[in-house]
Each structure stands twice: as C-alpha cells, then as structure tokens.
Image: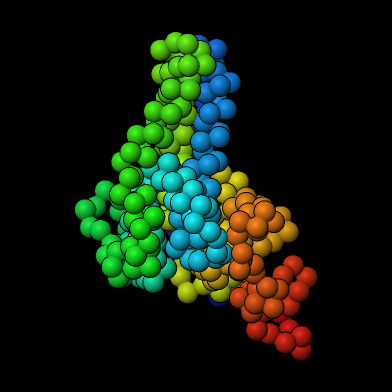
Length: 316
Ligand SMILES: [Zn+2]
Ligand SMILES: [Zn+2]
C-alpha cells in the first residue's frame, strides 16, 4: 500500500475542526422548525435556495473555474452574467477573489499562500490557529493581493473591471431583492423582513462558510487520492453544498479541469452546469478531464487496481 501524501492529524484539532464546523450549522437547522409558521415560510426557503444556487454557481463556475483557471471559454453575455452572479455571494469583488485564488495556487500550503491552515505549524495549537486563519481569519487581515501581478488579463477587461467596481451595489441588491420580493408577495413588512433574514443573511452566511471550508477543511481533513504538491483533500460531505468544489485534491492536481469530481459518484453540480452551457452553445473549448491524464495524476490505486507507479510484478 502506498503511503504518499498521508498525514495523521492529532485528535484534539481533528475533533475541534468537526465541532466548529458542525455545531453552528446544527443550531441553524434547529432554528428552522422553531421559526416555521411565524418567522419562516416556503417563500423564504424558495428565495434562499434560488439565490444560494445562483450565487454559488457564480463563484464556482464563474469566479473559480472560468475567471481564475480558464476551464472553458464563453461569450461576453455569459462572462458578465457569471461575474454578477458570483458577486451576489458577497465574497469580495471578482478581481480581488481571482487575485487571491491565483496566489493560493501559486504558493499552496507554503509561504505566500493567503489562506493555508498549515501556516503556523503542525502542533494542535498551531493547527487550531491555522484553521481559524484559513477559514476566515485571512479575510479580516488588511493585506490585499496585487492584481497587476495576478490578474492583469481581467484588469484589462472593461466589463469585468466594471462589475468588480460595482461590488458594493451588487452586495446591496443581494439583500434588498429578496426583501422586496418577500414584501410584495406577502404585502407585509414582516414578509419583507423574514425574506431578508433567511434569503439574505442566512443564505449568505451559509454560502460563506461552505466556500471558506474549501480553504480550511479541504486542506486539512479528507482523502488525497491525487498527486497534488500541497495538502489539498477531497471531502465528500461538502460536495453537494459546495457545488463540487470540495473535490479539492483533484482540483489542485489538475487546476484547469472543468470537472473536479471525476469519480462515478462524485457529484459536481458546477461541472454539470458547464456541460449545460456547452450543450446550449454558450461555452466552448471546455477542458474536460481525459482518462489518460487522470491515470497519471492518480496517487492511490483504484479499488481492485494496482498502485500508481508500480508494475503488476511488484507485490503489495
Ligand atoms: Zn486549495
Ligand atoms: Zn482553484
């Protein structure tokens, strides 16, 4: 059995990671039945789901796979739509997001990475601090990634630069639009407030934590079946909510691939969306993963297959 890329994390930070991630989420789930009927309606749920999906896909398909990594090409209309949709997730202007993320790939889990959980070392205390830093601490720092250096291509695009500058307005719309719809549909201020709360605040909070988990959890816990030069992992429980971004180990092994979840049961809604765009003729030159390439990138053997890099003559 191959032991490449295998690290064993001490129990304390391992348990802490799970607690920090799951307890607030469970509290939020517990609030749903408590509020149902008086402070939460089907309209609020519907608005929250629709806005969650649009804004998350804007980030995963748009900011990440398209703008950062060029996993496919598309026309001006879709380009602008993806930049606006991603901005609705309130994760920063598109130019900031792309610059930070390209820097993350350039220095993944090394000095210079804006959000590595391994920044402070591998002791339990260092990892606890590192988890906080990678999850959201880095966002609260004042340092900004140099856009001239990391995304000159996007700076030169007037459409993208305009959407990036309009981030404040798009953020306001991301909260005001659900409130207006909720208010008009129920013809009440209370309806406007509950829609604002669930489809605005709660939806943005959930999408933030899911997105940040790719930086924290997906560089700490999980499987490493692919040859990446960093500590990125695949984390299946986050696959659905993250729109396929939690197949993060494959992403670091093959950053320009349009599909991150390449296994038969690895759900990747972002790849599915890109496939629909391709079928509609809106996206082209899509970088779908090729079997030969995946075989080279595999770090661990397929179930029943032989370990990568070994010939059939070598025993296990
Ligand atoms: Zn990463
Ligand atoms: Zn990436």
